[in-house]
Image (cartoon, rainbow over all chains, first blue to last red):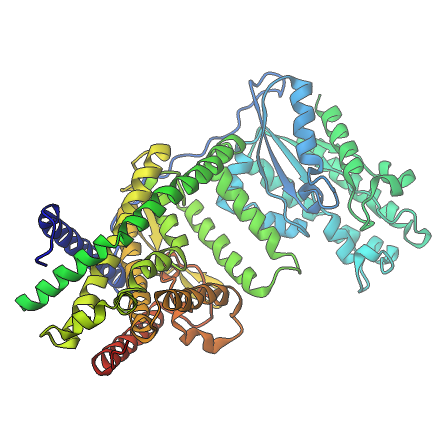
Length: 275
Length: 328
């Protein structure tokens, strides 16, 4: 220590005290962490929850900007679209052009494999309610999983081989009323939104043994259409015709979900229905 | 006692003069802006894409829920995601933003991400050559021929190590806060954050959840990071006593730390790995309530495992250092 340079005679007191202070601070943090883990106590009161924004009444054309929330199953998710856009993003882009004002997606809340029953449960979640509650337009695809689950005789639906048209026809009357709950709940959360429900199609139209499924699909679409008419501010966008003549063009390789062209067509139709 | 203080003084100045701590600060000054920039880009992107934080959190919940339904995702990841979804849901239900972009949240997440690799690495920069450098420089003979008992010399080095570990953790935090504040603003100390999430099988147990301030949360995280950094330092001290070359001792410790980070990611089925020190380094998971790397690990367990490793390393270091012959 005898060879210490002059500047270092000050270094030790500063460095020593700084290091000691840091060590004590770290020790207190460590003790605090242990105390909080084993003797938990809140240290801050939660702020008052602010009321979430809600959609206003009025026509889409009159509003300065539009908020869109998408709900439902893998179709809304965009499964099968190699570009990943799905019909939701395409619809937003087309709506921007059509209305000439900002159109924003609040959330795409779609979950792969969602059924109508689980959608009703999902609509109880607070975040979902806020997201739906502020939307001017609610985009929805639901029911496909319900129908193909009841029509399934075991095996993979996507393979198409195990669909039983008779079973579907028999169980359809029990399944359709699930949509009553979906519409009722959506309306309760958001009295003002325009609900756009994309109709179902028969992805197995090209298989002769599964062609009778189309009758049940139309029946389902008709049921939902009646609900929409009763509601007054809801639209059903038909898609079944697209996928009858052009199964190969519009379906993706899983033979169940649309491909990017199919989604583009669905988006076009939604925008036509909203204009 | 005065003798010991003089020894600590001497050791502290020696480390300082080797400019190791300056290198640590320099590395931090270069790295933190990089992460701040990346984080600021993400925050700006989110602000553009989402109407507000609620929409953003809700989208994270939905996206993770979708990942849960995929068969391609391993079960351990699903467990982690399920816990995340339930936590985010809890934040949303209580109208609390889980990550407001500000300097305090940035600093917290910087510490969480550096506890397993980055902080240990900086600790090793100082710890690895504490003894071995004396050996390679030949000064160990000078040191040991002085009329001071050998254990006192190692004890002084040990105290010095603790002081520098504290300095490293505090300067990492302070620099992260100061630099990120330029981009995100310096507020956020009083914001609430939830702690006390428990795991009950695959579900999150919220019975003990309570809110603490971001400031207290950061201090607790620093304390836990400091504890695991100390353990790494103590083990490095032993390695530095055992191995002659600084390079060898640095590489040995780095291999141990890095393999721990890898194991923590993939060893969830190898249950006895939980007794390794390097799998237990991330103590912040218990504070955040995310599932630990291996099932059955708790805060108490990890603290105990790390404590045993640290004490054993110290005992061995002292035993070897006081008996060892000094050659060449």
